[in-house]
Length: 268
Ligand SMILES: [Zn+2]
Image (cartoon, rainbow, N blue to C red; front, side, top):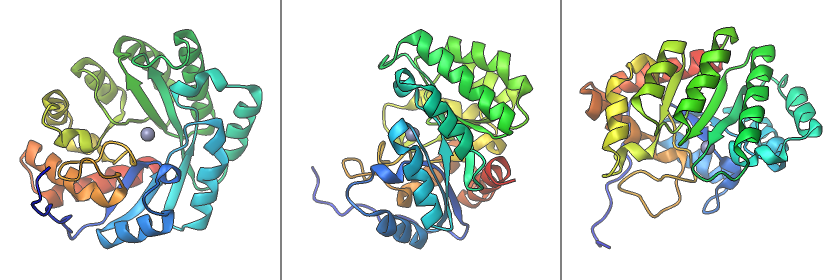
């Protein structure tokens, strides 16, 4: 490993909206320290995402404790096997809390198959119905499941008043185009800074700036040049810079548009 000092996190003139992090999974710093450090770098709104029955309450508590932190309610596809009527009832009850801004993260993951495929599809559809009923957008995780995600969204998205985002987008151009045509946004994170991720950068190229959201998915997927360290929302400026470079626009333009996209999707 090189001893060279890593480039400092750049600070820009425009605020940044962190649309996808898991604050309750951070280990190196406390939530307070992470939020303070991120605010220094210009990040002023955060959505902390729920994934499992065990953190549906936790994300609500974090959002109650911090004015600029919002949260979601939902079960990740890995957790689909833990879907019960109690979990469903909890998500339904919590979803009326003012700081719950989406149902998520929900979706399909046929890479790890931690839950049976059929169960994942059933739980994904049920949570899309809840979002439709509650008029909330969704935060979708899709991995190695392009045809099934296309099928489910094509069937259900037209009924949804608010659409949502396919976060940490690493799927193919067909799912990207279908999602964009259905009114969804695509979320990009540190993956776009990885050397071997040209396919994802190609998706950035085809995605209109009006449909791009910035996220870290921290504590996972730390962007270059901080790979190997725990990820946090404070690294978002590197992701904005990379989007600007790929789309050949100014970082300011990326920041202004991404912020607008995030507030109109989640806070209006
Ligand atoms: Zn996530």
